[in-house]
Image 1: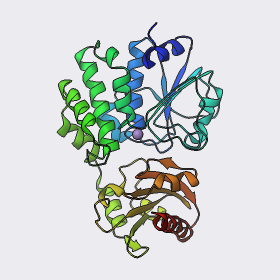
Image 2 (image 1 turned 180 degrees about the horizontal axis):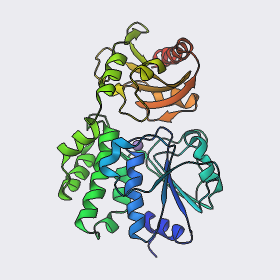
Image 3 (image 1 turned 180 degrees about the vertical axis):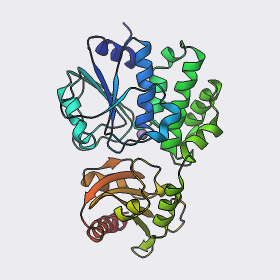
Image 4 (image 1 turned 90 degrees about the horizontal axis):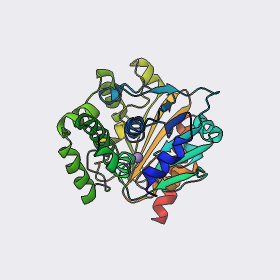
Length: 328
Ligand SMILES: [Mn+2]
């Protein structure tokens, strides 16, 4: 009996008729792209699955999703098995929690620190040290992948590389360790073209996105004795530019190099009075702050959603950063 994770997962799924694959709210280039890969690996085992989204715009992954079978979540959906990736907390599933609650079998593949309200499953594989869930899937299923045709291996390598680009921010985050470069080298052996993937994933944007980011950058203020960089994009800006900011590359990437900023707070109004907040810090544990408000992520990069007027949202977040800075 082979007790590898991949085998246990295949055994678990072999008893099921329908399989849902899903990830955290505000899906990103790790969780969502990892699902494209996982879906393909399951197909190779004769297992049909459906990726369940929140109906977000996924066009930025067009170069990887020619085959993906995706449906937006609907209230009455039910599947025998649900696999959650890049997320281990019910709090980060939103309405799609129902997919887990209604499934007979649940598996979780993730690399986040355990947060509030952990998802209960039959098969959990959570490894904090892994760079991305896409990389985890490559490693967990490597034996299977190596038996596939070159074109399919290349597709899976592309997905894996994009997940790494997403979670390392193009190999600049602290998680860009030796093992990550070694895995990237293996992916090159499968014919990936890093410069093409980099362009497709990071530099594939519209004029309105550039304008949106530029106007957002112009809101920057330095707060808390110039230790925290704050910026925002309100809903009016998105409307004015006829731009849907959800699931686009976050402008936060462009301010992470500000030398004096010990922390970054970016508030993006995605609906009137609903703010998607991104927190970054090189010295503070922003995951703790995010988790307090039902969000999550990693120590140095986390996100949450907050409702209210900008002034109130900003004041709340700044007071959390102030406390964290005092304790640091
Ligand atoms: Mn991830």
